[in-house]
Image 1: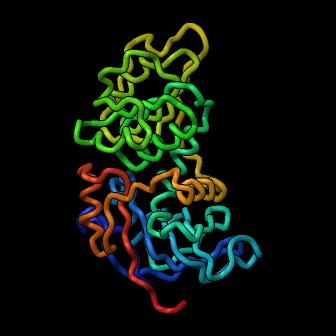
Image 2 (image 1 turned 30 degrees about the vertical axis):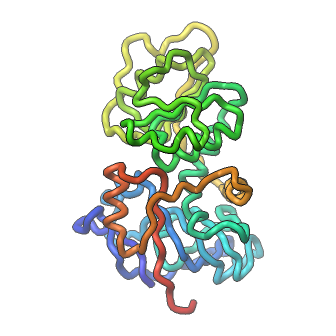
Image 3 (image 1 turned 120 degrees about the vertical axis):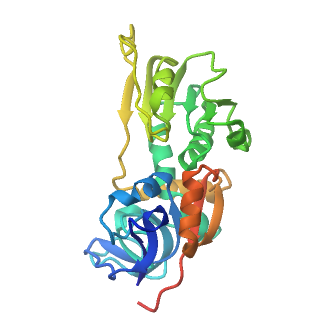
Length: 306
């Protein structure tokens, strides 16, 4: 079968190549992949993986082989999936990491949801946000645009931070109550920060955190170190916290929640770039250059019968 494989000599370290058919464990099903989505972090770190690795985690398609342990969707089900080796004509994935796609949701939109949507949903669930002030940095990206919408759905006062004025487009319509460049104009403490940027902006954002507030470290798009001033991590009163995020265990139910929001018109998939997976280098570069607002989805060439 064909797949997007790691090649350090290719543009963006990815190219179309050949890969072995996936071998499914009893608790896994096999998907005939129709669409995949790229995440900026995956693209940025592709070159660090062994050459020939089938890359990617986000896919949507149709089940062509059900799990032999009897769990999960049956053959013919339209699903979205989160799992390693997703950027291929077929993938094997745990039945706990898939969700059936409602009939009214396009599979291409469903492919955009897994990594970015789960990250936004689970980090927002780290504390109560109803009536709270939530700051989302890097808000123009995939995770950021989902987080803005979900935070607004959860009743938060949403502050969306972007890197430049041009990246602010559309965020107010998605639910942001305030859109800022960097941290300019934020004059009141915030209760929760979803940080996609890192670097000195993270250190500065920490100073905006209210007692008892928390930071969820999602990404580090700045590629710069964060230097905290002496004693800046000391706080009188309820503890302020900073947490990493990497919980992608058994995401199926949360994928189903995101799909329900999309089906109901409450969550926009925010697909800003779509094309054939033969254009992977073009899409990858656009992501790295921050020329995509939201998600990039690639259409996969159909495979031969399984």
